[in-house]
Image (cartoon, rainbow, N blue to C red; front, side, top):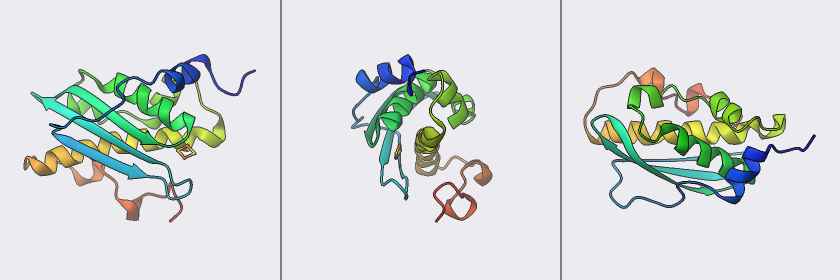
Amino acid sequence: MALYSEKVMDHFRNPRNVGFLADADGVGEVGNAKCGDIMKVYLKIDNDTVSDVKFETFGCGSAIAASSMATEMIKGKPLPEVLKLTNKAVAEALDGLPAHKLHCSVLAEEAVRAAIKDYYDKNGVEYDQSQFPDCASCHICGE
Ligand code: FES
């Protein structure tokens, strides 16, 4: 069996929604301390719904494929639904990632979450802090 699924290869070779939004309502940038990869997500939000999304990922092929898939999965979705996006769902939508590459999909989930938090913060929207784990409560990068 090939290491990477057809879908991973497709999203790696032809990533959807690459770029940035100059008029983004929320921007989220996260990095993985171990591999040094960085992902930035830009959201345009109308009526509590993601009306447009772009990403810039400086990282491995799996991270690029996961970013691309994640943006496809959240476009046009209401924020409460977007907040339920998990890295597991992104990896499944890609027909799986090798075990040692699963952390790359975590980057996508976190970048989306960070962008929503940025939008909430900028607009004075109240939210449940536990939906946005900070470094102290996260053990992904082992810092
Ligand atoms: Fe760093 Fe994939 S190896 S995100």
